[in-house]
Image (tube, rainbow, N blue to C red):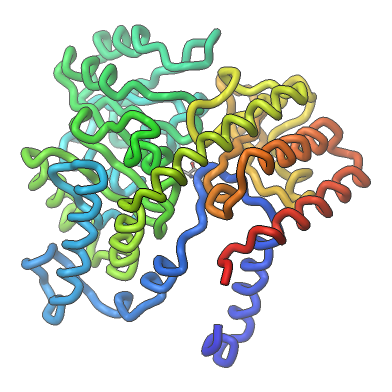
Length: 412
Ligand code: DSN
């Protein structure tokens, strides 16, 4: 912050306050992570200065020779990481990546089939409030009401009835393993394409901690900033036969100049993800999530589907008589950041909700292990079971701050 503190102390102060907020608290938002210093450095570099519309070797601007090398490295490393035939690293976000696949392979008004937002899906999978709900004829599947897990028979029946053009699998709030092969078979049966959005579980898929969709479904979209632990951004992977259509849909179809500082930082992140330690990291994310889930259930809280197979879990707060919003607020006072989330068969608005989503990528990046999850789970239960007990919340906050202090964001 050396220069910023001199030229814009107001913004420097905000950044420092946010750093301290992250340092002193526990981030349990399932879609967030903590990037390496190397990724931060690449993001804040001169790679932000230039336009580079086009692709390596075919740009619409001069002076892109080093940008070409950086983008090629990002593409090659991502392909190696997932064993993909083709990768496009230009989407600005996961939604942009999804949009490019739709734009390449689906005409306005054609059928898009996906998981309902309230059951764990994503806005860009066909929600009425997203462009997808306006542009396409959306059909949505739900979870099995008893198990709160995917019912592939039900999805297959719906696909046969609706005959969509693209079937989307992947979710933002689904704590269980997804059978990508089953989804592709369902799509093949009805002559549809299958797109897996693995944004949440990309790190798990890359390391074999969750079965991968790459090479299984027609298209895989992802973000780079969740379990992959990179800069905020998106990417698409597919077989060579779809490469040209995907690349054209991203640029010039949907985006202009790529964010080359982000693409450079993606290259850094993908190299980090190729290291053996990244596999261990992703294994630990899931171990931590399982222990956190068990602790919460031991404390009497109900988890959607009765647990987790991945990095996240959903607490059903109906039994506690409180909303997700109330739980989020009370935990915030205790220094624990989480987000309210709809749960299957939600009756409240997405701004209130009956659930709370928790994830372990950030705390695992900080080096926390199973024993810390047990403590954190007990603190969460203490707060959500008695959200008006200010003394108890204060006590939890003291403990949270003490634990957070032992795990610096960026150890020297
Ligand atoms: N908003 C992200 C999440 O929190 O899951 C997905 O894009």
